[in-house]
Amino acid sequence: MKTAEHDVLVIGAGGAGLRAAIEASAAGVSVGLVTKSLLGKAHTVMAEGGIAAALANVDERDDWKTHFADTMRGGQYVNNPTMAELHAREAPARVRELEAWGAVFDRTPDQRILQRNFGGHKYPRLAHVGDRTGLEMIRTLQDHGIHLGIDVQMECTVTRLLTDGNRVIGAFAYEREQGRFRLFRASSVVLATGGIGRAFRITSNSWEYTGDGHALAYEAGADLIDMEYVQFHPTGMVWPPSVRGILVTEGVRGEGGVLRNSEGRRFMFDDIPDLYRTQTADDEEEGWRYTQGDKEARRPPELLTRDHVARCIVREIREGRGSPHGGVFLDIAWIRERLKDSESHIRRKLPSMYHQFMELAGIDITKEPMEVGPTTHYVMGGVRVDGETQMSAVDGLFAAGECAGGLHGANRLGGNSLSDLLVFGKRAGEHAARFARANPRSAPDGAEREQVAAAEQDALAPLERQEAGGSGVGAYQIQSELQDLMQTRVGIVRNQEEIEEGLEGVLALRDRADSVAASGNRAYNPGWHTALDLPNLLLVSEAVARTAAERKESRGAHFREDYPAKSERWGKTTLVVRKGSGGGMELAEEAVTSPRDDLLRIIEENR
Image 1 (cartoon, rainbow, N blue to C red):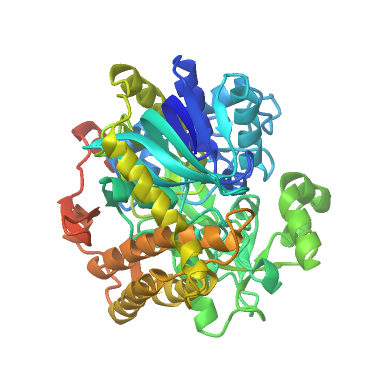
Image 2 (image 1 turned 30 degrees about the horizontal axis):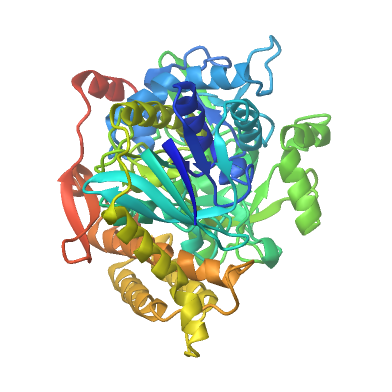
């Protein structure tokens, strides 16, 4: 077993992990960076539309206060207000910093960073690089970080955090290529492992998103919050089946794309929430009228929050007005009526989307509409962290990005994910380095050796079951059944009976997973890897189902057809998931943190 020692260990090499590693390394401490896949293969690259930051380059009225209020409104006011404030205040500086490190953004005519409209944002706020913003972010962070002496371990999966009382002291992992075990000793650990999308059948998430950080933190003693809030992006590819669920960026709608049903009607005008309506709807192509200050503007209804757009699409499909392959039509080709050179405009603004549909579906989006439908995209829930430091309830254990909860409340606004990575990745790395300097790791002891031995035994169990000639269950089969169960029972539209059926099914699958077997040896063995991912997928699925069953209201991404209205009581309640003393999962209700008086005034002024 190879052993490495670092002051700070960062698990995950997406935007949050890279930014945390850069900041910790800049503080002068030893940093290790472990990634489950290859460097550059982070899900951050799928965030195509842009980075939300109140730069005010396109509309001078924008500022951090408006961004804060938009984030709170989008999250249905159950966000952590400290995180929402810090995010809105610090995002512009993080974007300019990224530019200084070499990110090449699209430009305004006077050469400032260009910003586009996005769902839930009052003003054009998303700094972007065509529709490849996440890719440019990863490229820039990697190019900057590679010179800082960070020890990078690729294709290495962490299966357990090591603790000493309530203090994290390291991690146990295995190399995916040869199956060798790795021990990482560290004074502090930053989790930046992303989301849980592979628990669902239709998802934009890649294979790495199995809830690893959520499960690692939970098993180490940290709390999870807001796990009922799973975001279904309104527009994933519907056809052909081999690419169903792959993301179609919100930037398509930000650049003028409209949603139509099989009758050719823009159905989003049918349901504009009072929360966003300041005047009566105006059925003109550009959007409905609204006022901001002393100015009047228009906003296309396709740029309402993602939870609302996804439900409207599901309504059209259920009522028989969907597209031939079970979605609706997203049409940006209509702008040829407005622009002389619309084809080159679309290809310039949305190069990845043009290439994606042309290569994978044989569709030219400059001439014909796309077929799209909701796809599991993001989880707002995650590890509960301190709003300023990003440290969890476990000393020395930090979390940032999608595996951390609090910032987005009940629903994340598009573009806030990338600025979240930058703002809180930096903060997690900064405070993890500070903690490591103040609390150096102790010498290895018997408790560490016992934990390592137990982790090793758990990792080898699926292989040993096969060697013993047992009739073990296949990991792929259980994962497939779990995905179907979560998609159909705990998906976009929920009710108590179906959620309880889903929870019962998850618990039954967990029992079956105890006998999962993997054939072959430890080298190049994806069946074994899937078997080791299963406990994490089952754990986060149980957390989603339990919290969804408990929250008897509809709020943000959590929609209950049996409780379609918001509840004043639940609007003041956060559901906390933690490991009970007996080892089972427990739920607790805690009061939502109320914003300071000055932040409440900002919210009221921007309603």
